Amino acid sequence: MSVTQALLGPLLASGAPKPLITHYDDATGARIELSRATTANWAAKTANWLVDEIDLEPETPVSVSLPAHWQTVGVLLGAWWAGAHVTDEPAGAEVAFVPAADLARGEGAHVVAAVGLDPMGAPVRGLPTDAVDYVSDIRVHGDDFSPITPVAGDSPALLGKSVDEVLELAKRRAGELGIGRSDRVLSTLDWTLPGGVVDGLLAVLAAEAALVHCTNPDLAKLDKRRADERTTVELGL
Image (cartoon, rainbow, N blue to C red; front, side, top):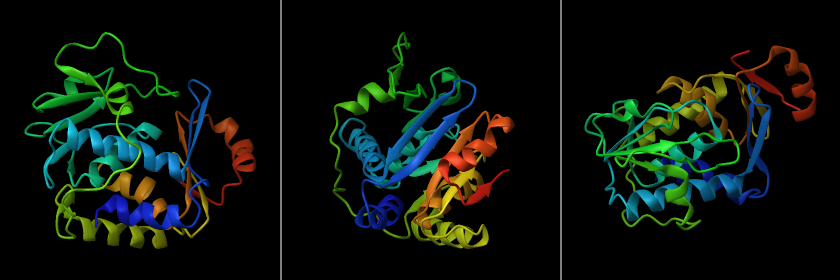
């Protein structure tokens, strides 16, 4: 079972419409909320694209060099659902997911996928011919994903750590960080690989909690955000 199936399965079973990811960008004033079901849809579209368009095989390296963002959630969960080995090194990777504003970070990958990071998921215009627009490409793919080949627990998932190791680490870190079931976690953590992604995303999902992430946080707005979002745990603050 993949990292994604193990994390999303319990969340979907206990309440697919519930909020899962709320992303603020205080530099733009954007607020986007994704339910558990919508998060799974984005992950499924990504996984379907990787398998159908890229012909991705399980254990194939995929590079992810993206900031904390709701689109990054879809990229990571989709890659793991397809059985990819997520790394931070584009050289030799089948796909490199990079910000559209910094395509050079994908140099050396077979395919460079530009992630626009637009609050509303708008497509990226004017890309060079050697890059693809992540959002535009995945939109046409299905909202459900069924892996052709089951992902083994000992398959590499994150910088050499296996699926089972990543899941065990996420659960352990959830406990160490004080994240429990139904908590609402307010976070400003950077999603560095592996530690930032484990603490700032996977531990939250492993605990069956919800994430409220703030990019470019305005400290003057945090008290109101705590009240508005009814957060119960904080990371990076």
